[in-house]
Figure 1: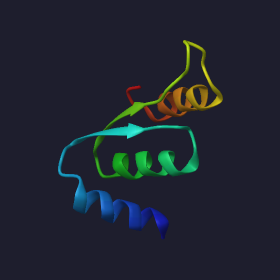
Figure 2: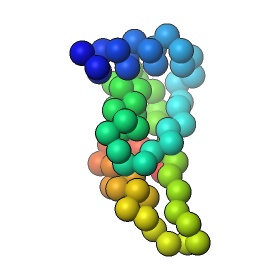
Figure 3: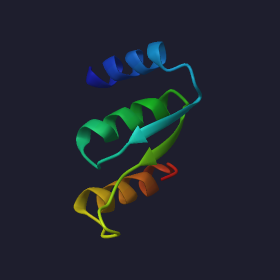
Figure 4: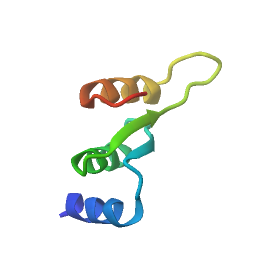
Amino acid sequence: MIDTILENFIDREVQSKRVALLLSGGVDSISLGIAAQKLGKKVSAYTFHLDGEPSYDSDTAQHVAETFGWDI
């Protein structure tokens, strides 16, 4: 059910074939990325780290992006 809601929202609101995704590695951002990908959109993920040091979020985001074939 949630996947359908996300897909309908993205389909209605995002006209571009490419999307930028702020990816923390949490369920919210991953779910949006998966929904966009299911709609045929090219996902480019962005994450962060402080002072050049990887964080749990950036490590997880890197892994998720690699798993789904998203640019990061």
